[in-house]
Image (cartoon, rainbow, N blue to C red; front, side, top):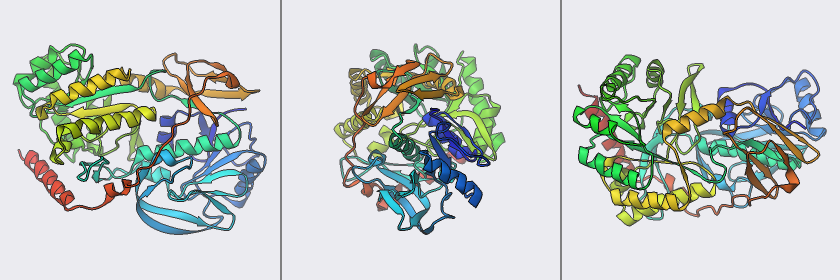
Length: 509
């Protein structure tokens, strides 16, 4: 039995998501009969002819499983359309841990007596013929969405922090696809196997990013002491507008240096973005600093910026207006994949908490809650700070908490190198007589094996499934008031005005 996903058409959004999850997949043809032993799940992303639909139905009738998305099944059943800003998963479904997912798009809801509901709030359905799921949105289009807007983020208090971030919750959509594939494998009594998205088998990953705009020597020194005393290797994105600080960064040990900007602004053309990055690189080179990464001012991203980074031959970048709280990926725009690995972070900094009038105890609790949630779901924790905002004692406590939970720590470039190795893998998973055989060329990447009763993370290449030690699947209690994060408040207008004024200020020569 080949544990491989078959997809009817290579679409860049789907390729991004499937590579993030780390499944085995390739494109299949509907010209001939397909055996359920060849593909564990077929992913159908577009309408097909009646003859091709017959091949899909035969696959289902023979015991296969199908995931329909991108309106692929809607030529066969009636549906209604609805514009939505967001959806929120239902309790006690396979998708409960998804929570609130921003769509800002049209969804199509199937209407038929032969349709049953799997998650009524996400509008995830299943037709009553065979093992299948129907997603109501176009995964490909949503993953490729490059729009941004201000969003509020959940906290256990009335006033919430906000930031201008990616419009679509791409990380949540990736989770929906992953949970869909897991659900369909379990329905077939098959293990769901994919590459694990963290370097360590027994610990979560913690990455700390620092943006040094307006940072004094004193503040940089204080932040460095806190990192050093807690054995945290951070990645410092250097604002090079002031030359007097750069030599100090070159002296820091076990810290990575990368580029933030020379002028604190992202332009809408290639030439200005390239010259801005080039000028910053020239300055840090004089101090003996070699940079592989970049993080844009304000978290802004556009195609011209990406082309400038590629021209500079940088390796990775991190802009939360493109994506946040997600796994790394190579962006796609203008019919091509970027060569720059995008590493999403959690976009709320201490400055945004302070702007929303958090007390120091509330600031600390915000990050503790965030870290605990990502720890629970096995997700990397990547947070950031501006040292000129100070609050060094809070980060001292955050680092102590991280170390108490036995996190593994990497710089962003170390994670970039590891993910690049993972990305190039083309795993093969064979399942015969309750035994899993794994094939891919790396000793640095683990796999996750999920069965109905639980999951495990493993480095083994030959595994007897009924002998593995299982951890329980993640359970989620959906916050009853989570929808308030999308409720409009007049402060949103104020913060948007402040953001525009700040960008206008830095755009001036």
